[in-house]
Amino acid sequence: MSAASAWLRAWIAKPEIGVCHALNRWGRSQPTRNLFRCVSRLGDGPVWYALIFGLASLGGTTGLMAALHLAAIGLISWLLYRSLKRWTQRPRPFAQYQSIQAHIAPLDEFSFPSGHTLHATAFSLVACSYYPALAWILVPFTLLVALSRVILGLHYPTDVLAAFAIGATLAAASLLLV
Image 1 (tube, rainbow, N blue to C red):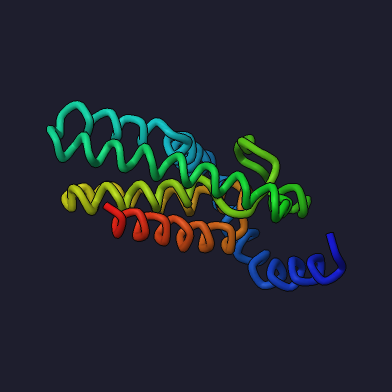
Image 2 (cartoon, rainbow, N blue to C red; image 1 turned 45 degrees about the vertical axis):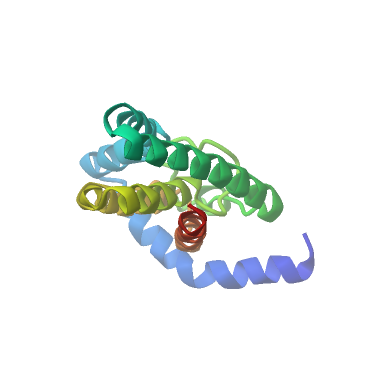
């Protein structure tokens, strides 16, 4: 890592570390920690797999098209976020600051971007474009997934915000192509 890259990371992290500390303290409460652990684990894939399977099984031709679209956006999102993590190699907040506790084990080593948030955003936007009535469930769930990643000490707010932007861009681009 170059000196300029290290300086840029420190400059970006400085204002947001207060937010990380404040949200991570919410995780000290057992009920809050349990809620966000559950949301995070559901965001690992079970909700999205169930959505894809449900749409393909119950949605007729439109559901099958939506399910295939979701599967494609999932693969593209996964490839992109894995590449970005390897490229940026941003340490997770709990690994960088002893005062931040990881309230759940991370799935991988690096922080930027939040794969959970990227996938939740992309999946939700694509699914809601086919079935707008799903928004009342998927939008709050996506916001909870994003919040969970900071509360659990696994991501910085900028990891989550960037993931929202990347997920929204991928979803929009894929919808333009369909």
